[in-house]
Length: 472
Image (cartoon, rainbow, N blue to C red; front, side, top):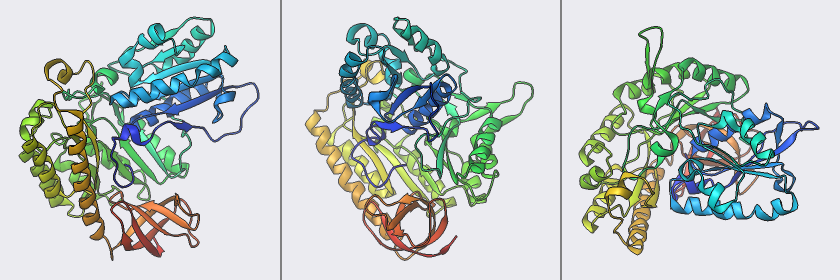
């Protein structure tokens, strides 16, 4: 869901974004400085946190110095993500020296993983709350204000926050996230998510549909359905035999309004179904884009990763997807240097990338996470310099793939949802096409939130450039 190519995983791509609700500040309210790191799920969670605290005497601020409480929503997927958060927390020490009543809290996956360490060993924070403890924040704040250090990292088998309406923080007013499920049951050997976010549980579909409808009524034109593995979404009514699968949910959200685009992330190769592809074909507003992590192109490494599929299975899924939507936009995740990976197995990953020709990828070196099966049972034995060299080779291969895929779009006309101004010029607008590719084009009389048809005239490996031919 990011532009172009990155050398780092998504947890490093949106680092330290300050989230502020766009509303008039009411006198007497305490001020919350909320900073989010990590994946889209973390940013969606921050909108839940803001909703809870805005109902309990707080407003948000982008001025750290004027805050009464500073909360950092964290990521634990890689060690350097955690180190960056530790360094950030140390930046708050002078603020607390000047303002002793200032509360500092750590939220999210890193809070869940490290639990008491922040409070007892490092004494950098007053509040620690895991991803399932956000309803408890008002009580935790009260405890911290009374001089006690407050912690709740309890993982729930039921919490989905389905009844909480997220506050949309510092967004573009066009696109929004909707979390449809929480947790993960896949137990990939390298991944800490099942231990920091708990087991899978799905939201009531009506709450999801109502949230999508509310967003459209407020002017949003695109929603992204979020889950660690959206394809395993499954909701069963307590008082009947009704079961809603992800394909069924996708159709229900698409039916909210044909002018509202629907995206989803992330998919798992073992779970994506033909029913999902049939829904994509049936509804024009379900975007032709899938993020399908491969992690490695070698079957032995995939088995060590406990990904539950082989190289051949993955390629079969790609063929199935393209049989329904030939021009589908495809992205992936790739890990270099997993435990015991040989040079030949690394080349298997590059050969798979060249066979599939992904539009873009999130690429990173293996980072051992304490407590995971890989950390307990496998040896992190690939030297860092080898990991880095292999990552560089993966990046080169993907850059070439991205350029190939983008050149295929030159001369084509596509429907684009305008997200705002280009980063480089207020005379240029940016927006994404159906395949989730960013397109830059002259502003003209168009504005954010409009649909336009754009003919692609040029490209780089990261971006398409074009001209508007008519409004969509």
